[in-house]
Amino acid sequence: MASAEFEQAVEAVKGLTRDPGNDVKLRLYGLFKQATSGDVTGSRPGFTNPVGRAKHDAWAKLAGTSPEAAQEQYVAVVRDLTAG
Image (cartoon, rainbow, N blue to C red; front, side, top):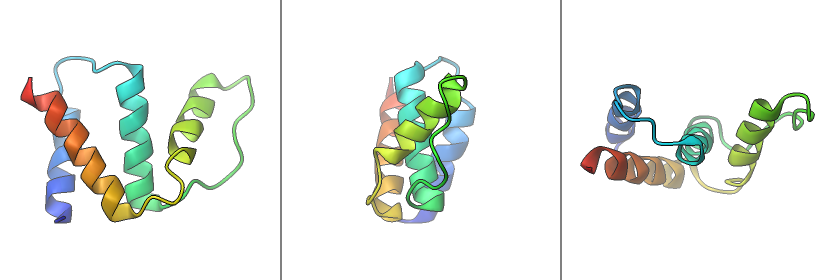
């Protein structure tokens, strides 16, 4: 998949007018990080940082996913969000 399509999807997310909800946002965050940085690094934040912990967990679920596959999944999620 061309990374241009991924970049367009990233820009499309910034322009969303409706909040897709926390689950979708965490999914997009994890896919973006996997696509751009590879497998999760660093330690999991503690219980005093629930947002950081949720982001870390969303990214960690995708361990082993190739950057190309993560880009494709990201584009598919954004396509669903912008279609309706």
